[in-house]
Image (cartoon, rainbow, N blue to C red; front, side, top):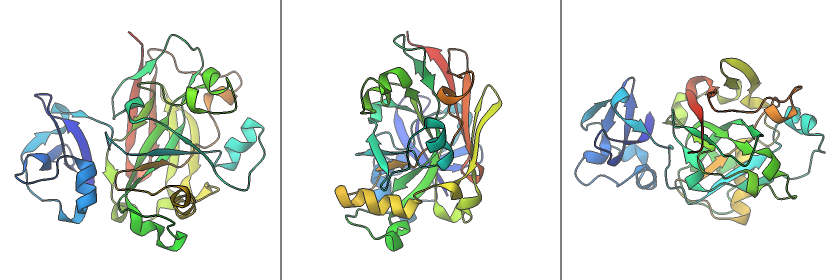
Length: 278
């Protein structure tokens, strides 16, 4: 199944199940969870099959989880990206954070701030946690996953490198894409063969299979759940392949008027136009 968070035509927020070009508004059903995060906590297998039908074209998609408690991002998790940065492969994953208000949904605008000329893309696979856990064994990790979706960890590179900490370049408003939909695991049985593909104005700039992750999803969940408790609706962005704009020759940075997409096979395509900050 595929679940989305969205704004109805009247501007009110809801969540529902995506069925082709139609969304069943499950948030409109009496007694339903208030949002997709709450629905995950209650168990998506309990989500109803009926609700008012809305045309996908008539709604505005929000980030898959608009209100995650945590957004954990894995850096340097493809060997091609490690190589292009000139860094050494470490014994443990690099982990940093984003804030929820930095994210937009599918077709939401990427906001180019005036403080930079080095706005970069990072296509990634994101994991949404479905079941609370601490010190989760890798063998049990998939039991804690609600679903998967594309992610774009847009980065303000000059601010990222002001110091050794990534945060100042990683969480500007409107610089992260998250969607279009939460795809349950039964719809992605061969996840490793799905390719993370990023395009800028139609040009393919990143293309690598999920199987090339240095630390796979169970390993990441086991590691992160050791230092923090993972809760339903938490998000882990698993890292970007090589081909980022900052390391291309010449560099390829996002500018207003560009469109960037992240496609991951059966998980769908995330599209974000780039606009100047007003």
